[in-house]
Length: 231
Length: 395
Ligand SMILES: Nc1ncnc2c1ncn2[C@@H]1O[C@H](COP(=O)(O)OP(=O)(O)OP(=O)(O)O)[C@@H](O)[C@H]1O
Ligand SMILES: [Mg+2]
Image 1: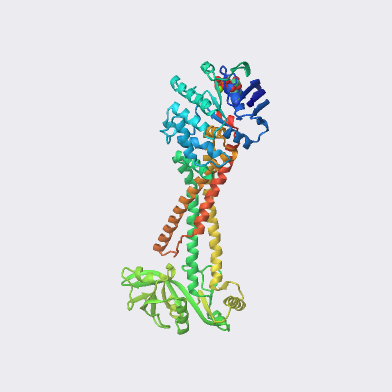
Image 2: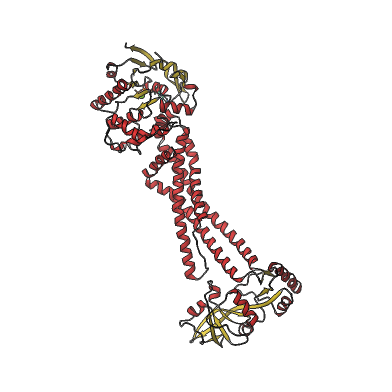
């Protein structure tokens, strides 16, 4: 099967004044199209840094990150923006919605930034919001929504441009366990029913035990310590 | 797409209403003062031009170079010899020597000082006054050689407690005069508050021999400006001095417009400084906005916004601030201009008509938009260049 994400010997070194902080030290991750992968690790192990590489939010200091076979280091700014907007849907721990915009407007945002014209953005946004279980409250602003509702809006936004990959960094980290499970179910649903490649970054070991997980990567000190492949 | 960016920008503006208004006020004040100053000076120019149009194009005015307006104590420089020199020029039709000065007027035991004009009132001269559009509202023109006066429109109403009427008797420098006519309103206070009499009679009353200015009518079919040059040459030779100007109305108008132009430039220049302050205000607000919304910029980049898109959103925000400031400022400026018109009209000081000028309105609004967009450019560029991870990490 073809790898949709291919991370080969990636190093990320932050320069803190004269001190070099290596956040990733020779990271290797391969994820196939349609897989459900979990990246686990303790705090500070480099999970978010790894997610930034995979999501084309940042470039590695050394090594290769390939998305769909294309090296992100060879893309220019606007191509990177296009890849982020159309291939990947991000879900963040802190939701990261735009506070001045309503739920619908937040969901239409990626369609606005898309290169090609999207017909009936609002209709599409409503449809997605209904899909994630937010049929009401569509004209509310993030400040008027609960944490779980906000994360649903964020997930709806990640689906706006029908991306192949959903990349979630601690998606349940700011939710209570009941809310967290609902969000978890929603993400799993998207993977199973809508065939999305789902990558979840977390320090919560419960995710690794979920059924349907294809890959689990354990990170430690910026490198893979252990990995498990089902099937 | 553009309208989507505009909507996002608008949301940011309305989200921080107070700050947005405070920012816009900078531009509002600048635009309002520029618009008010330009429209008032345009109105003034229009009114002055109108007055000169009334004079026709074939009257030459000969005035001393040094300013000897009403109230000036400078000596009247022209005598009968000067008048004869001008009369001898074949292209000249009628020569009208005039004098003016302040005189004491007494009516019903009440004294008042005002402006007395001695003008020739023979048949030939009266034709010229007729051409210029001086008209009598009531009664008739005073006659040459007689102790008769014509009263300016405002003088009749306001000079004394009792309104002056035709057939009243009025003392001018303690000599008895009969009021024979009230003039129609001219529109400028200098003419409307004056009292007119025959120039030869005025010589005795003002106790002066010389004339303050001479008007000369050009015979039809001659180029007034060429004749004015000729008058200038002949009179210079006779007087052996260049202490006067012989000008046609259009030449005088040009001179006045030159002066007005300079005044306008200075005033608008000063007003432009407040526009600059407004522009700096917008720039400051935009920098603050970029800083506050760094995280949002990171989010938008993560969900596919290109550098261009971010740039457009922030430029739109600055442009909207500019355009709103421009619109409100223009409206305010027009109101201020109208206020000046009303004030000037009621004081009778200078007649002016402030008109709504579309080029001015559109110019002011687009200029304000441009100022907004320009002051937003640097902050917007800064926002666009932020790296997505760095922006996302920002709290
Ligand atoms: N921009 C940065 N500049 C300097 N050091 C950084 C930067 N980002 C991350 N680091 C460092 O790199 C290491 C890995 O950070 P990272 O955020 O990837 O960890 P994480 O596994 O996501 O942790 P957590 O579970 O707490 O989110 C940490 O030591 C962190 O301090
Ligand atoms: Mg993290």
